[in-house]
Image (cartoon, rainbow, N blue to C red; front, top):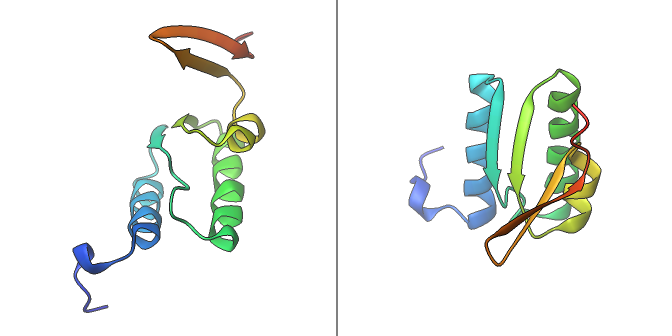
Length: 93
């Protein structure tokens, strides 16, 4: 409780940032490598929360190198390679 933010681990900073976003209850959420530095137990919980938010109709943009997370959470997937954007999955909306 009395620990300064800059003294937290990367994983704790990530969890705090995700919690802050969720508390605002936005219609659109943007994450860059949201599970970076987070232990597996917490990562499982965060994946579940993101899927619940998706079911509520929220738009969730995720940039990640973790292919399984993208494939399991995303409805539409784009790949950016060498400055070129390619549709990989979805896009039927």
